Length: 232
Image 1 (cartoon, one colour):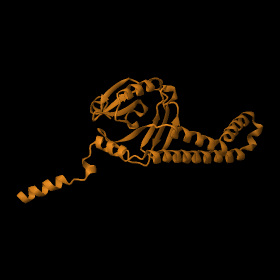
Image 2: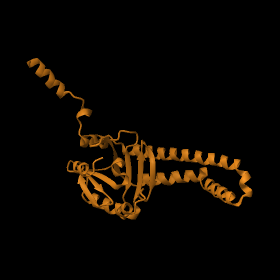
Image 3: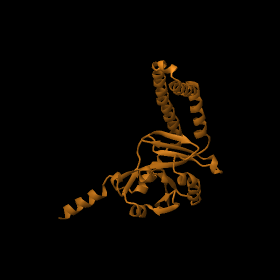
Image 4: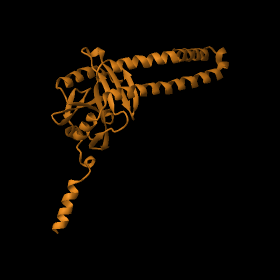
């Protein structure tokens, strides 16, 4: 009996760390292993890859337009084709290189706030995104108009603009105010989980607790309370 008890005790002591880690510990590990210089270069590489895919799409459209030349005699169709050709011209390889260089200059110029992506483990539990590119980048200027947001999704670049990616007027109106409020608290980490409410939530870690800030509603909750109020 004593041997059995000792065996169970030792087994419990040597459970793999990944199985027993709390979400806070997972977050700590992700930030502690972040190589910020390499990560910025990986973001730029992914941004370039995104343009390659888009340019291929433009070339395919150009081939389609060539096949539709017989529409030239139809005014409405000719107007559509001329508009598409103009778009293709603007997206020449030279212009694309300029876009890539401009993006590279922006993301290299200053130090961003790294926003770690979280993903659902189940309806009540989140875990750290362990993909190739798990961090979004927020460049928060002294004046909110100078903000720049880079989002990743499924390990690839997804968005990079000076406007927050939302079609919701309340979210677009409140996001800068919310970020200022959060940053004044000096959080240890900022987090993001689109599966909660898409662009309407920003999460952060403060005093070993995780909070969820609902942007449109300007209200925040501890993570456990959030799940009670808004079950998934």
